[in-house]
Length: 190
Image 1 (cartoon, one colour):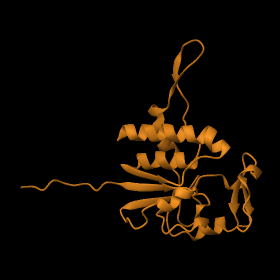
Image 2 (cartoon, helix red, strand yellow; image 1 turned 45 degrees about the vertical axis):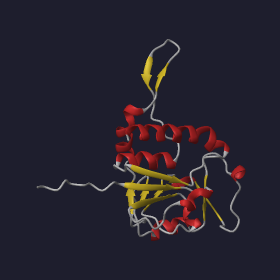
Image 3 (cartoon, helix red, strand yellow; image 1 turned 135 degrees about the vertical axis):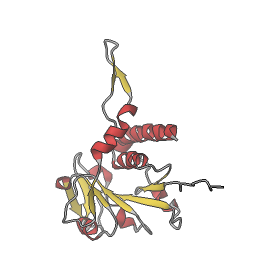
Image 4 (cartoon, one colour; image 1 turned 60 degrees about the vertical axis):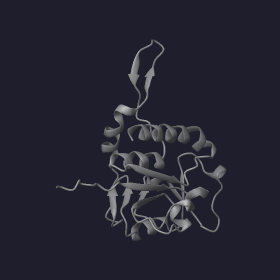
């Protein structure tokens, strides 16, 4: 009698910087852990892939001893601690960037077009003033959103989310509804 083929469940955790990040089950070796942006300063116990999807040309670096407050960050600028680019260069894990760069030896190009193609038919439809329904534009507004979309595309069936509270004003108004929508769609896909 043939034994049934059992495919292991692909599982990942998306980690952010809000206080619940430390609830991640670090010792669960079957859980792939994804970090993002400048969260490396928190000292995660382990990480399996890193996502830095912001344009480097918009980075402003600060001294880790004196981080800026959220109110001091102008729109379109991304504050990163000094040493951030060095962290990305020295990473021993895959680093997903907008575009792979040999300066960052483990860098990979984030498959944006592939992700968008996969998710295209899930975007909300919109009805204009004339009552004409059209498919809406793609709907992703944060790195955690891209990470979730990527995880679903890559076949992760169990996705944990820690440290993604999306509670600052901009996050709450724009990013949180987007993340809630994507979580709902992902849950609907199983």
